[in-house]
Length: 259
Image 1 (cartoon, one colour):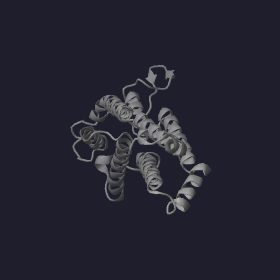
Image 2 (image 1 turned 180 degrees about the horizontal axis):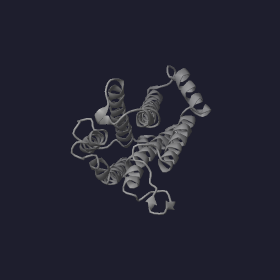
Image 3 (image 1 turned 135 degrees about the vertical axis):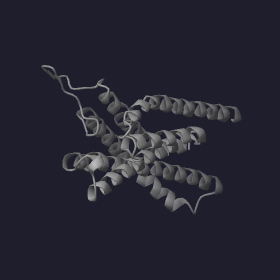
Image 4 (image 1 turned 120 degrees about the vertical axis):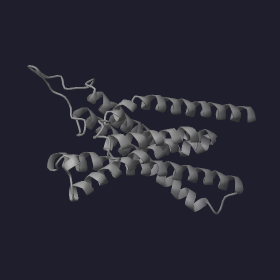
């Protein structure tokens, strides 16, 4: 849903929530950068601690949080918190309160405007809450389940009982978090259905290889495939963002010709 279809008065009313939606989208991009770009760069030693000790090379662990991606997660949290503050600001509450009281007393044109504003607010909140749900799952998996399994559990191939259940749960949580972020990303950009299918397929396949959900990844040493296919992510994101701006430009041109 593009705000370019609103008149100037409606855009002014929606200013804070539009900023909040953009900050939410920025948080989603930040999460993609941390989880799908920074981590592979660490794996291939492009991002590593600067200290060397003799012949020993210190490097970040791929499966546990490192300083760069923790900094990225802090940035993501700040973006989401700021987005929430904009979306729940006093001015937005006053606008919603005014819409509630005046909805039954206005003419058809004003009622139509109120409906468009209400639909846009619901659309942005839907994106925000899905993104927050995905980030909650991501945070729970990364900082609780993954670290707990790395510290207290045996190797995955030797795991059994409760440990095995937690490993499966962690894999499912990772997949659900990735798909939630894809949903929010596609919802904000309103990407074409073909690009949407590519994004869902990309993150589903990546998670299968990264988490060993199929069981043969470690056996055939296929775990490296996940960081390798992450090379495609910047290309996919850039293409979808460019497509969004192309569609936006066409809508603006159509509105200009119509007026």
